[in-house]
Amino acid sequence: MGLLKSAVKPRWRKIVFHRNALWSIGAALAVWGAFGNIRIPAIAPSVKVLDATGPILTFTAMGFAVSVTALALILALPLNRAVALMLVNTDTDEPVQISELDGKLMASDPKTNKPLQYIPTQTSTTGYLNLVFVFVWTAVANVWASLVAILAAVVVGNELLLSSESPVSHAIVAILSGSLAYASLQMFTALLTIFEVAEFFQGLSRHQLQVNATAQSTKPA
Image 1 (tube, rainbow, N blue to C red):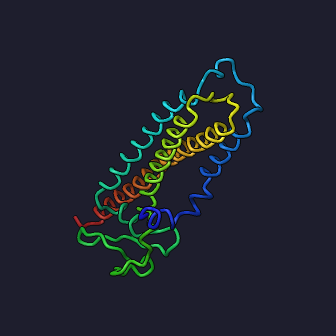
Image 2: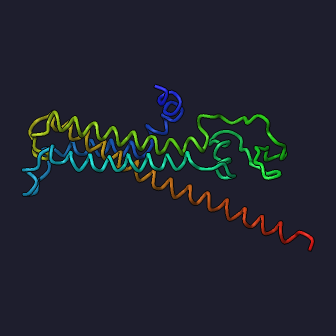
Image 3: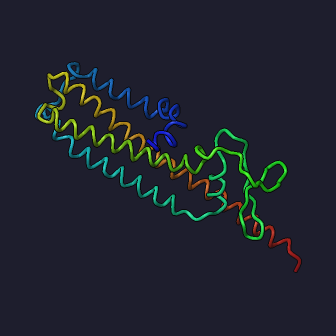
């Protein structure tokens, strides 16, 4: 319940109306509507639902492992200017800048450059927690897809995957397809997020190197 209250509740609109969710719903509906209206290839009629759940569980286990590994790396990041900027800034509040004085980082007002003893931004939707949430939610999506795959194996495992006549099988396979699509899209989003964070870190690091070089060049000989 803590995850739902502190992480999901502030972001539920973005989750529900995100393209990943909409495309996954579309995938599930497409699979549901395709039953009885598609021509099954010659090799497909013998494939059972149980035959597909093994590869799906392998894929979702990989997605879960990648998400947890990324989370561990994020939580192990040392405090530097890039991390500090993510800790104090959100998408909706006034921006807060990070200054450095005598080797110590501090939050400051970008308009006045005065140090902020109290950071006014929300703590639940900072850039840092948004980054963490991407991988937490990716892990959750893969767990959900795994649970649906297990349910499918138990309930309709012996049904034919594409040519079953059972409405229950149709519904479960459609839900499984949507869940797998969502887990896959969420994994792709997580990988894009990693690249965007790398770009952010690179930009700040390059800027800092240039500032250091400028400061060094202006020192009297």
